[in-house]
Image (cartoon, rainbow, N blue to C red):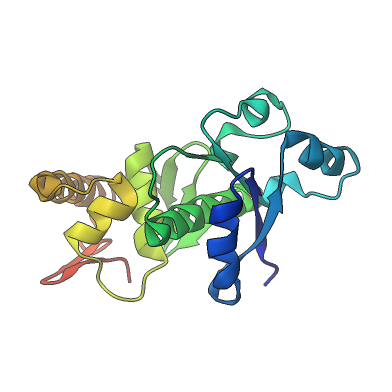
Length: 199
């Protein structure tokens, strides 16, 4: 499978960290000093924008002004120090979304998930999902083992506080209830002692 691409703008320290583990990453990484350098590659079509993500510092507004780049393709580095594993997971989720958006649909189990409209279909039935519900499904879809509430809380919600664990439980409960009501499916998201899984 062709790897998708991450472009890190003016964050040399972050690039150096990721470069040390690049052989284990599911994406390719590139570093540019500033927007002028990367804009030359846009103009010469050396960068496939559709399959790329751009990591930048919050102060850099060039990418938000570029009409060719979807805002969902931009990840702002706002908090220092960075939890590198959480960042890699966030990047991976966004790349999965990009890849599926490009393909226009995700097929999972007996369902078709449209990431653009945030709707999931089965037979002639349709269910509207929230953005966080889509993120949860995409995250669980790419895992082979049950994911704990703490992992979901950190990776999907970005929370670090254990007090917020009820947020995940309530969210998953409502999502499972939606699937039961719309599709009569009580096993779409499986619940285990050690977490949740889509199998």
